[in-house]
Length: 194
Length: 101
Image 1 (spheres, rainbow over the protein chains, first blue to last red):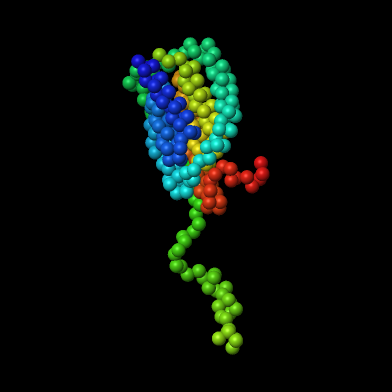
Image 2 (cartoon, one colour):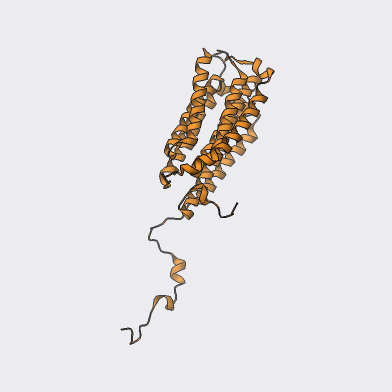
């Protein structure tokens, strides 16, 4: 029964990942990535990681992918993708990806990994969020606080990179008013210019 | 019943596909950032699968922090992309050749 959920969603996630690279425009690529995340969240639910699956959907899809869509909307992305150059890099990409995948599959198909089967224990008394909280706030408290500081650094750096000041507001700028000289404000016309 | 190796193979395939996306992508930098997200997703799946294998929740805690860092670098990467677009008026990968590399 578990296999009827795992294999379709795994294949769906893989196909969505392929379509992210080959999509025609950027909005479609972002939406294919969203589909890939949803399918992977289902796979994480099968691994009894309920909190992380919901966090993936809420935080990653709901915030980060929406941020991607905002940026795609703001930037004037060229529609005309050069398809000719696409083909010249396709063999290199497939060669690299193929060798990495082949190496990883050879390493990961060892006997000890194949013997263990994922059997979710249908234990309703075990609460994933409670156990994660017990671990996160006691044993990994320092890392948790550091993650909070990291998020603060992200906010500060994103704003300091992109903020240009309030443009178009007619405020007094005292430094400019005080530094005005007679030469910059007054032009005396001679008789020949009149 | 699904062997653990099938989850690991899935995450390996996802990782390799995002690597291929790096090489094949000649359109714009946004696909580049999305391939980074795919790589992180593959690594997270691997971590959660092993967390189930060892019956240890530390893998899931690590995924929690990887998600945090991934969100952080997406936000900052997109901010850099926006500033780049303001300067160059394009986010074509081929136009980033000022270092002649």
